[in-house]
Length: 484
Figure 1 (cartoon, rainbow, N blue to C red):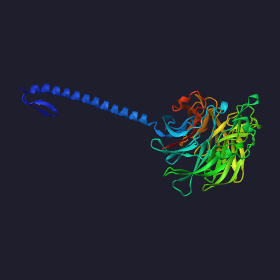
Figure 2: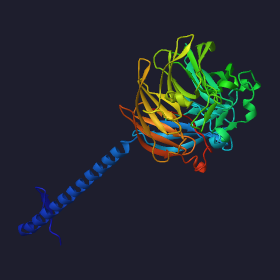
Figure 3: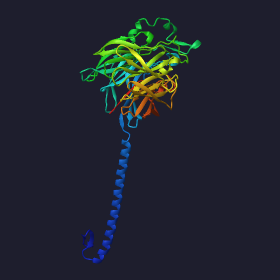
Figure 4: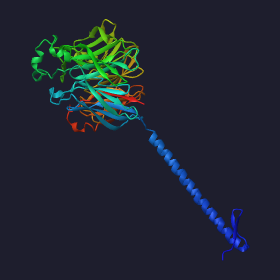
């Protein structure tokens, strides 16, 4: 029979037998210490788990998605928009593609060693909660709804570009409107070019094309134009308004269209006819590019003027200065030997005349770099220029409408000659992204520092893996993005 017991002072005690209490007391102390020890271990383990979880959370949160980056594949068949998540450390993750249901403009068989290459800047633009992109082979502009929470796109419709081979988009908010924009699309038509020299010279599309007077009007001029649209960011409707201007064959079709910062002017660069793959680019073969400037008022253009200089062709990317509407910073791909220090030119527009005020090489020493694409930072004090042939990014300081050459940085990893194209600078001014558009099918990341840029890494697209080793299988067009 058990002895009755009670708990006193936290210890189990026998009511009848004090000696028994000694054993019970010792046992209780042992059990109490045991529970204390176990409790201590439990608390320690719990704290350790919490601490580990906290550390893991910090690790996970230290590199968050800060925004999204977009380009288009511009391949030989259906064009696709490719989206990447952009992390806070500048890296790219979570590649995802969206079909346009329209065609890209690549053609490996065209243009001999050029593998169908053609060039432009500004093929993809984000306007409000929409993304617009050109489909160079389908002669259409795609309108996508943009989910800014996850970067996903939903195709709304495709609209005729108003010409052949659309390559560049510019937009401007209408004065006094909350949701209406003017949109201008540059239609390039084609890019006639001449390669090599002497007995090996090759003229594309053919010799007969160059035996014509290319300054005369031609039926193809209507395909080589700039076309005006309106765009509504409430309904997502892109509506064709009219053709603004068209261009003769001599100076080529548009490569970039862009509004000045104050919206009072529209500028258009044209391809010209380039003579490349030679050390002796010839004035007898080359035709000069032009940079046109128009006054722009409520959907109408006026006061057409342009800059043109013999020996400068293949003018592609440019940026307006952030202040006013008089300065443009322009890149030039194709230069005769005596003008290789014109890779970058500063143009001044006084309202009646466009003139050159300065010119620069893309490197410390003049070379055939084939500078083609430009990006101006948000504050407007740095200009970045990408060179196609040498895969260099050049940095220029900008002050008072003037440029100062700073430095160059070369891509690494897979960087075949004739690959680098468009640039995009992150809104926080920390990272510069550069397309490997024609051969590597990549996006290359540069860290931005005070003096220039530093190459960091390369992301090769899985969407275009089928083009590996085939130059021109794709020809990426456009590069843009946004941050939260």
